[in-house]
Length: 546
Image 1 (spheres, helix red, strand yellow):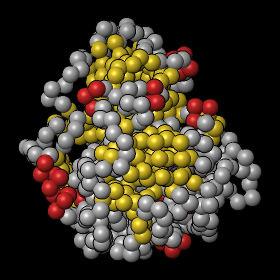
Image 2: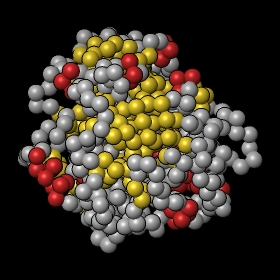
Image 3: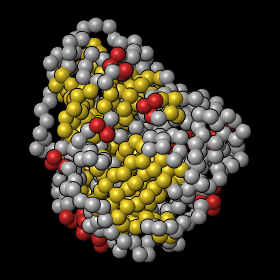
């Protein structure tokens, strides 16, 4: 595609409503610390003076600006510098016949694609022209900890009018993306692809298409992601919770936002209700999502005005799929074609052929297709939400697909990450875990009390790990909803020589145990990549012991 579209998850903070309710927990395998600022639950607005370092030095843990982090970066052998300038700004975006006011990087949706080469040093200067502090997280990269872009944990937020330079070595090729880690800013237009090319690329293909999927609410009929968050944070009160219920696992009570939006305005003043009831998907184990998005986009375009990718019949095309959505899983298929899966989350797999793929928020898949002659819909079905996004592959004549095109492949053979095997070149060596971190996913939509182990996010609560350990993360989902869990700064292996990933779907009632090697010191987030679940508390921190 090379047509980067950017839409960044918009954010506002759960302001000071959150952390006063949080208890810094201490339990087996975890440590409670008091060195961090507890002034706000919103991990995007816990600000220290300046724009550089974390809010406090973590006693007993490796600091994001500590010598261990610098030494790990030196081992990556930083190479030639590639400079990029990004400006986060308020702007008008054209979605294809419909314009909206939002926040974006420049005036593009998604933002301008960043493309670099393995071994280079990426030097990205972020200028903040927004009315709120912001940040920049590099999703999927194993990078130095003080560049991870999590305010209140690895650095301070970038204040309005300020700038910050992210500088880090690129140590692994693949398909990645970047977005803020401040409130729900990701659910605006602040996102873009990051492609790290391999100078020894083993795949052979003629063309490449980067496809970014997104669910869109910002600026539509007065809606904002902040207002959506405020509405969801109130829970469903006395409503019928049959489609959102589930064992809470002892989560904290839901937060009463008093009918106020995140900017201090009544939530009713920021557009219609966006709470979704009754969205069901067997693939997701039941409840498909919380938010009724008015639009679903491919590369920033509505289905009525889709992006068209041109090729010749017989061309071998590499398609890099990225789900940048806030609350939507997408089932993707290319009409008339099979997909050969080559990578997931940047890492190669033993190639497997399928007709459709399911992507949770934050997941990426690379596929190869051999283009047929004609015009074909690339359709992304908003799983369980009865809506689609569309792009078009054209290699010859024929009418463009209808905006509601639903190719038969969507209901054909579907491949999931659990069915894939890691390529031998990236398979973790067999080893028993040195440490297991048990993370129960808890909460119910009725209370919006999403959490790990029944405790809402507190940046001072850390689960310790030690450098050199094989660590097992055991996610047990006791909720009635699916959650795409994401680990910063590392990739983990799914069971049974499964693929290397950084984001994985955990279905309701299921347990997923994943392993990673603790080889990147610092403080690293683990969270649900449903932006509203995360902001309502389903986040925590892994900390390397000093």
